[in-house]
Length: 154
Image 1 (cartoon, helix red, strand yellow):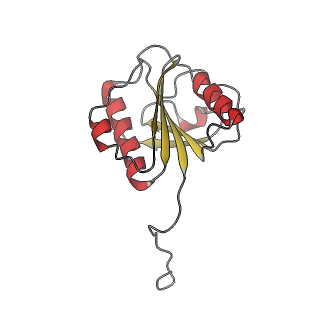
Image 2 (tube, rainbow, N blue to C red):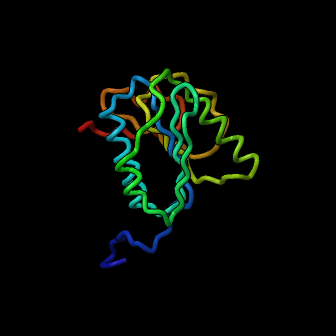
């Protein structure tokens, strides 16, 4: 506290482990995927934590794990998303549930970057969930659960 105002500090702990899923279906434009990658990069800059990045269209295409200490700048500058097929959110939720049950991961939250157009699975996890969509995509009130963050398109 400084002059009665709470100010952010580098010393305040943040999440230790995040899972970020990216909808790589055909409805996600290349420009939107570039913007999503920039947002993921900013998450890495501001939250020094372990990050699992899942690329999924109708199925999981790729899972990448980045440790907190890894510098991902080079990797993100050359990143190519895999997929471009249909959309299914269920594979990501199923994978996370399976890994949590096995004790392989203990994420603090799931961040799902999508346009929102797909079938939503039943909510089976109590893991905090943030849907990240751009303006003009599925409206926030259409998401059946989780929090929704709308970011402006460049």
